[in-house]
Length: 106
Image (tube, rainbow, N blue to C red; front, top):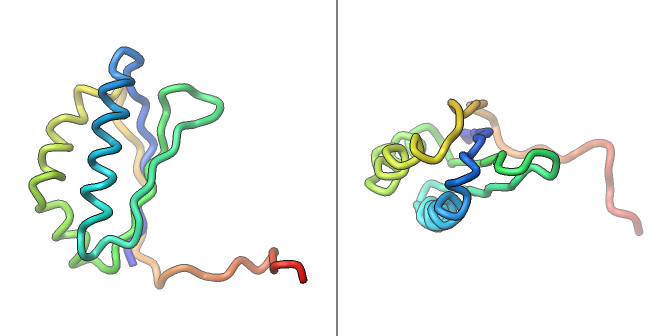
């Protein structure tokens, strides 16, 4: 599994355009065959700062993802939305693990 986390600060004047664009991009990425999950969240402490979490089944799915037209268009569009270069974490993992500290109560 590939897991990617991004932090992106959006230009305040581009907020409405960003929200519309990221919603469409989320739908497009979630429809990809190798996608496990694509979600975005706005920071509760920093308006216009977004976290994007995405997971793909393997590196082949990740390679297929970046070659898709909607991804190329998004990466051409995104520089006009961001206030600074986004931050990224990219990891290849074995998959999800159970959290040891929490078990559902009976």
